Image (spheres, rainbow, N blue to C red):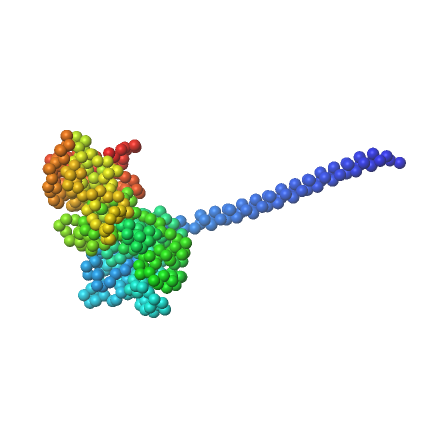
Length: 468
């Protein structure tokens, strides 16, 4: 008869062998499962990569992807058509101008140099028409809906504007290329004046200065557009209704400083001579400001400034500052518009402030503007000599813009020791590279002069260069 210890030892051996066999088969099972899983997910990843590679790569945003939605009237078109005609590129730019009524015979046949016109739908058909605070303005907003319904192919951006909006379309393309048009974007800018933004909204893109809506956003907006207009029927400003409707969709305004509403009166030469370091996208309200250039009418001045814009929009109104230490002179270039000579050394931090040659729409006590300014001065050490854009030409190694003195400063020279009068300078030539200016980069410059002509050459700023 076997002992109890013998049975105990046999049982232990049996359990150890059984456990080892169980662990072996368990490991085999999990290894096979893991291998199958790896193969499965690996195949999915491979398939997805192959599908992605097989899809055609999306082209970069270009001008054909922008749809301009302009609003005007035959009553104003006769005086404003030059503004639109100056930047519109027939058979290249896409869009329509929406009129409240059919153009008169005086405006027909419609010129092929204009955007195609369409007559806005009758807003009286809207069930809430009688509630609208400003029924005539509703068609401005609904022009987005009417344009979307045309189902034009390849549209990535809808750009809103008026019949007195001057767009710089190459810069628009470059700026909008930064954003994903398949996502919902609302891109524009506030007014230059605090009161305009208070009366309407700091969260609103002002339509006269222009704003852009991505296709994805318009696609969502048009579904509820009329419903939203009815909801906010008590508001008369269509741009404000737009901002409210988009806010209810969860989309807020993205600011781009290159859009300019120009809620200003009078001479805006000081404003244009010290622009933000951002691509110029638009100008507006030409009927409320004096002509951009001395001795020209409004349409002529717009045509003139576009001569420079048609060669290099990337540098339009961009400020470059350089010094002549031996004469204590400072040159401030607003490319394509003006050059100032100061008979004193000034830093960029001072000269980037616009000279307040203009007035606000609403006036009142300061603060008035959304930016700092400096006053017009009769001090000969602070008042500049003004030169305005005269001509442009391409040369082998770059572009030359010329600026002429249009009026005499009628001041004595700055009396600081060593300062020399700039009165003898009659014209200035600015040499710029053929390559476009990149993004928000500030360019520096060098200057020399001989006789009555000064020559300025724009260049990249050196590392750690101080513009002062």
